Length: 253
Image (cartoon, rainbow, N blue to C red; front, top):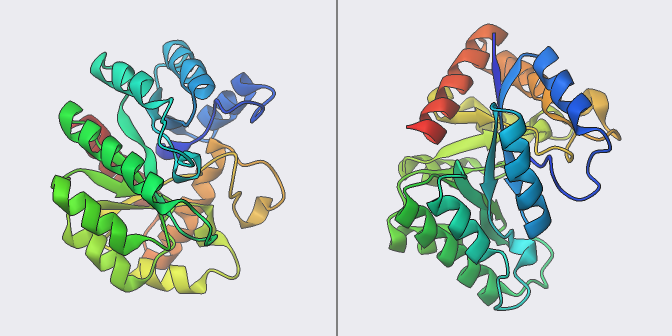
């Protein structure tokens, strides 16, 4: 039985004191592939080195919506160079986030569009961050005719999930699905085909219910898989295999 953590932040500054121990615990939990999300120059440099050290940790990179506070994306050219040099497995996470209500939406849209076009140019999958911004996500992505994307850490409605699936994209669930107050999200999950699902930790954030208050890590993706197995009335082994195969196809095909 193998697990694929499709979204973790391993190389952010100060995220982990001993990354080798984090990786060791992941392997001990049968997490055999990890996508490491890099969101600034430092995490990208460290991420590329980490991928050299561990051949089962793969780098993805982009500017997050929260980094789009002006029109000067200092990360973009480095991401493009790494992508063209085949050092990235995906572009992301990028997208739109209107949750707080004071975001600079036009800069977010500009950055998102640029990374969409880069994903298309390099034929890499796109990892999308969407929060209270689904309609704009769809409107912008449809113009680029994006074919291969995943909505990471999904917290949307059943209607929004359907629009994601209608575009042939995947939906990734994090430890949020395990939270006591996430019954609505679990209801959404019930109607999503398992063939369209990935699992993730979003480490070091969003630790699952049993580890709330602790720093999250890839080994904890197993708890998310257990909850999905219960909801889908399948064995943990089945969920592990299906989501592993889904992620392999998405990132490596």
